[in-house]
Length: 120
Length: 118
Image 1 (cartoon, rainbow over the protein chains, first blue to last red):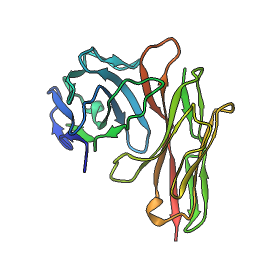
Image 2: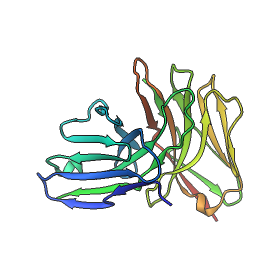
Image 3: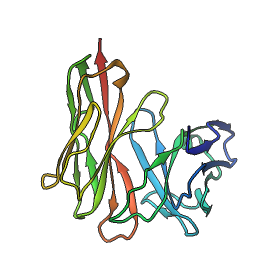
Image 4: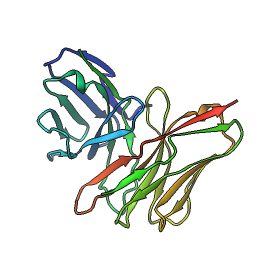
């Protein structure tokens, strides 16, 4: 079964509103989470990396005030798209792992099933 | 900057035949991890195979194997005895530190769309 639950799977919202996407690890402590955006027929573009209890590290070009990432607990990270616009419509995917990422890293990376966001 | 390059946007293979998907990457790090992921139309990310850079032995998982050439920074995926269910988008991914940074990142190539012909 799924070890990372991402919710909602689909959401439609009106322009100007905010949408929260949850990524929850079900049976492990997610010390690190990655958030991605994927346009149709394109690759996964890394938006930010978050470590539990720390501020997220955003990739260049990603507006941190628009895409708020919170990783307050070891089992939950959220991505909030604030004041959404039609150009924010996309597929968003989270990935979670546990254990320190280093030379001894041997933990699996688990992906959520993604959230399709449509902004009208 | 670290980049992952997949030079084959599309590939096709006959059922039961073998196909190789290419991936190269650029890094100045010595410790990192490489992955191949499969993404079917459902968009679920499915791990195909994983390789630790410090391991010289090429990873294998049943019909899937890699040719990891660390010096050449090449990480190709070979699919043997291709099956119809192998048809999907395949992404090569790199997990490691970035130059001058202290955070690990997981970044993906642009993908190769694999078609399996019956």
